[in-house]
Image 1 (cartoon, helix red, strand yellow):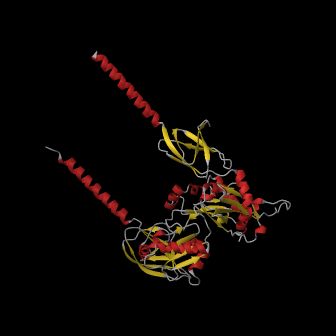
Image 2 (cartoon, chains in turn cyan, yellow):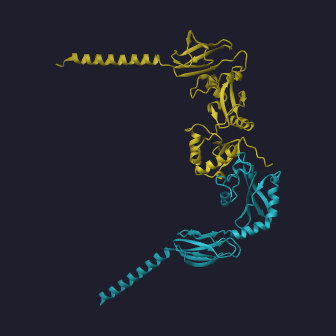
Image 3 (cartoon, helix red, strand yellow):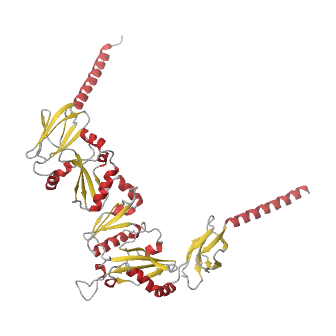
Amino acid sequence: MVQKRFIIIGLVLFFLLVTVLSIWFYASQYTTVKFTLSYPGATADVLDSSNNKVSSIKNGDSLQLKHATYSIKFTNKELNDQLVAFEVKKDTTNFTFDPSLSSAVLSKQLAEQRADIMKVVNGTVKNPSQYVIDAGRLYHQGEWYTTTISRYELSSADPEIGNPESVDIYYLVLKKENGTWKKVAGPSLVISKPDYPAIPDYIFNAINPAKPSY
Amino acid sequence: MLNKKPILIAVTIFVLLIAAASLVMILINSQKENVKIYVAPGNATIKLGDKTVAADKSFHMDPGNYPLIISAPNFKTIKKDIAITNSFSSLVYCLQPDNMTLSEYMNQHPEDRYVCEGAIGQEYNQDAQAAIDKYPVIAHLPYEDGTFKIGQGVAPNGETALYVHFSTDKSKGEALDWIKRYLKDATPPIFYQGDYEQTDRIGGKDSEIDKALVAKYAIVTSLPIDAGYYKLGYRIDESDPSGQSIKLTINADTAIGRLGALRQIGELGFKPTDYKVEFINFESDLQ
């Protein structure tokens, strides 16, 4: 009789131990992460590695996610919907995503702001009419602008065609601050990251003179 | 009864061997070359004590004080007393021409610039040591930065002087700043010559500064590149007081040369925008 009681107690303790270990093991595979979306009213879907939707989130939401790689896709129409991957690990508790506007929205904004931008761009060149100033591009949420300035000359071998490699290409970076466009760097053949650490990397990628100009 | 004869023979041979070895060592040491005299011009006659000695060749002199006379036709004769010790001494003398400045002479005789600027490696003579004590900058010479070169030489009055070869006015100022870093109380005469052709490289491939920079900037292992229509190199960025930052230098007088250099950086696997870049022989036509 006593022996049976011990067996029952032993079994209960065993199952309790298994349960506790299972809970601990399960919990150790998950982390609660908080999402910061730095765009007003931004919403996004969190997708797993097979691009299946795990959850929808907005700025400040928290999710308990299993340790794995996920991606985020912004669902606002005006935002770039390109997937951005992120990995949840034991120690990661916060993710901040800084979305860019879609190309269509940036192009529309550029057209609207072109006159203001060109006033600043033309101010950087003594005789703007002698140069070809590219339409340029806006970046991120429309606050960064880059363009190239160059003076194309006709090819000496064939006066009917221009020779784009016979001229220097200058790069120029502007930023809109407090509603006003201001020159940040250039026009220069190279705008250097060590000289302008505040310029984001995606701008430096865009103005890399080692690749053909846009 | 122990036979003493073999023992005596062995001891005698041992003592003789020791004596012979000592004698050889003394002879070797007494004939050890301990002096070498570099001189410009090369046809100068060198008299040390009562010996006439050849330039650029090591020889032995017993330790002591000797009168030294170096003379050559159309040059001012150097007469001085020097002290010779058993340790090796390299003596460097550059005679002052009678009818032109030393700078003019060196321009006409670049082969003698090597001697006159003291660019003979790391052998110091007593005069050099005294000069270093007075002007510590000399211990760091010769120094080459890619846009200027500083060497030690002799002023027309026979005093120690520095010779700065620069490429641009800017590099002339940078050379002076570099010299000032290592000056103590006295400033030697400094002679400037705007004849430096940029090499766009710092130090030698194995110099300490290059080793440190390679660790920080992998691109320097691929530089300099001379493609004919552009030269791509690097030099110390003087705006960083630590001396551990570089600028890439692109020397091209055509747009296609500059573009070629920039694309070359990309082909090496680097981004020009990650570096400060200085264009030489280029002036922006925008402003």
